[in-house]
Amino acid sequence: MNDMTNSHILVHEFSYLEPRSVGEAIELLVTHGDAARILAGGTDLLVQMKMERQKPAYVIGIGKLTELQGIYQDIDRLTVGALTTIRDLARDTTVREGYTALAEACAAFSTAQVQAMGTVGGNLCNGSPASDTAPALIALGAEVVLVGPEGETRSPLERFFRGPGKTARRPDQLLTAVEVPFPVAQAGSAFVKVGRVAADIAKANAAVYIVCDGDRITDCRLAFGSVAPTPMRAPRAEAILRGQMMTSELIAQAAAVAAEEISPIDDVRSTAAYRRQVVAALTVDGMNRAWERAANGESANLRMGEWLEHDEGRTTKDASRITHHASRTTHHAPRITHHEITLTVNGIPRRLHVADNDLLLNVLREDLELTGTKYGCGIGECSACTVLMDGKPVLACLVLAAAADGSHIRTVEGLAAPDGTLDPLQEAFIEHAALQCGFCTPGMLMTAKDLLETTPHPTEADVRDHLRGNMCRCTGYAAIVRAVLAAAETMTKDQ
Ligand SMILES: Cc1cc2nc3c(=O)[nH]c(=O)nc-3n(C[C@H](O)[C@H](O)[C@H](O)COP(=O)(O)OP(=O)(O)OC[C@H]3O[C@@H](n4cnc5c(N)ncnc54)[C@H](O)[C@@H]3O)c2cc1C
Ligand code: FES
Ligand code: FES
Image 1 (cartoon, rainbow, N blue to C red):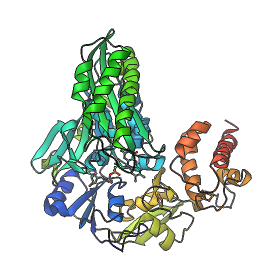
Image 2: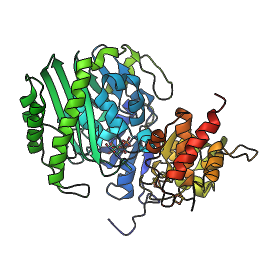
Image 3: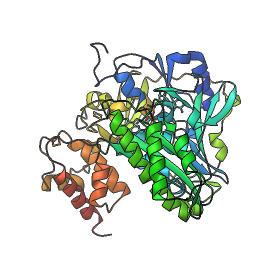
Image 4: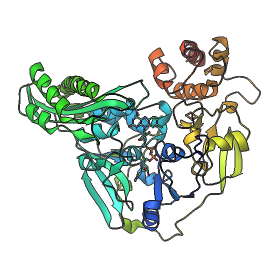
C-alpha cells in the first residue's frame, strides 16, 4: 500500500465503460483482457480499488444490463441472473420457500445496504473463501453459466473456485447466471453462519442439503465457507450420512469428520482451532434444520414457469433473457465514457460533469453541496453515507458517479417536505433524543426510511436488524430504535 491511499476518494485513474448488451461487454473484455474489471454492485471491487489492491485501467459497468437481472423458476431449475441482488434473493418468496439455504445465506449477509448493492454474480466472481452464497449454492447443487467469445459454458459451482480470489472464469468471460436444480420431493436445506458481529463476513459458515425417505437419509451435500482456501464440500462426512438412519449419534459422527476435513487458518476473524469446533457445531445445527424441512418437503409450494416478482414489483416472463450467446454481440461503438451525467436528486434533475473515478458521495457533498450525507470509513463499514438510490439504500462512498447516471437519489436533505415540515422520523429522532453528535444521523434516517417504506409495522427486532450496519459512537442505539418504532406508529396510526 502506498502513501496515497485515502478511502474518501478513488486515487487511481481508469476509463469507465458501459456496454449496452452482454455481447458488448464481452467485446470489451476481449479487447482489454486483464486490464479490465467488471463492476456490478461494487461492494468488493471499489473497496479493493480504494485499498489499492486492484488498479484496473478499465472498469466495465454492467449494472444497467437488465438481461442479467431476475429470478426464474422453471420445471427443473431456478435461474438467477448474475445481477440479482442479495436483497432480492433474500426477499423472494420462491427462494424462501424452496431454496431455504440460499434465502438464509442472503438474510445473514452483511447489512441492508450491502444486500441492496451486492449481486450474486459479484459474490461468486470475487472468489472469497468466506462468501455466504457459495456454500448455500454448492449445497443446492448449483451450476454457473459463463459467456465468452466462444459462447456459453456451464459448470458445477463447486469446481468454480480455485483459491482465495481465484476462480475458473477467464478474463474474457462474463458470469451471466446461476442455475439451481429443482429440489426433489422430501428435500430440505439450511444455512448457518458465525461471525464476530451480525454484519460481518463469516468466521465460518455451513450449508446443508438433505433428502430423506422416512427416517433414512438418501442423499446429502454439506458445504462450508471461511474454513479452507475456497468454499468446499465435505465428501467424507457426506459418505457417513448417505443411506443411514437419521440419529443424533450419526450427526455427531459426521460433524466430527467434517471438522477434520476442513483446512482452516488463523486470521483476524478467528483461529483454526475455533473454526474446527464451530464447523462441528454448525454441521449439527444445519443438519437438524434441513432434516425438519426435508420431512415437510421444502419444494412443495414452488410455483413454476413465470418470472417471479422481485425488485419492488417488476415481473417479466421471458426466461431467455438470462441465457446469452456471444452471437448476440452488437456492432455499436462499444465504449461509452461518461463525463456528463443526469441525476434526479431530491426530485430535482441535475446535469453534472464527472470524472470516471468520481464517487457519488463526492458529487453530492462537493458539487451539489449536500453535506448532510457523511463520509465515515469510505469502505462500506459504517453506513454514514447511506442515501436512497432508485428507492434502495446504497453506500454513496461505493458508487461510481458515472454508474449512477439516470438514477433518482434521495438524501437526508430531501426528507423534510418542501415547506420545511420535518419527516415523522426526524421528529421522532428529536423527541426521543436519538442523536448526540449527529454524525451517524443522516445515514440512520435514510436506512430507517427504507425500512418503514417496505415494513410499515416493524418489530424492535426488525429495526435492530435493518440498522445493523449503521454505526453510532454516541447513543448506544436504544434511543434510535425507540425513535424508529415511534415514527412507524405515527405514520401508520390511521391505517
Ligand atoms: C462492509 C461489507 C460487508 C460485506 N459482508 C459480506 C458478507 O457478509 N458475506 C459475503 O459473502 N460477502 C460480503 N461482502 C462482500 C461483497 O459485498 C459481496 O461479495 C458482494 O456480493 C459482491 O457483489 P458486487 O455486485 O458488489 O460485486 P463487485 O464488487 O461489483 O464485483 C466483485 C468481483 O466480481 C467481478 N464480477 C462481478 N460481477 C461479475 C460478472 N457477472 N461476471 C464476471 N465477473 C464479475 C468483479 O470484476 C469483481 O472482481 C461484504 C462487503 C462489504 C464492503
Ligand atoms: S462512509 Fe460509506 S460506509 Fe462508511
Ligand atoms: S450520534 Fe454520534 S455517532 Fe451517532
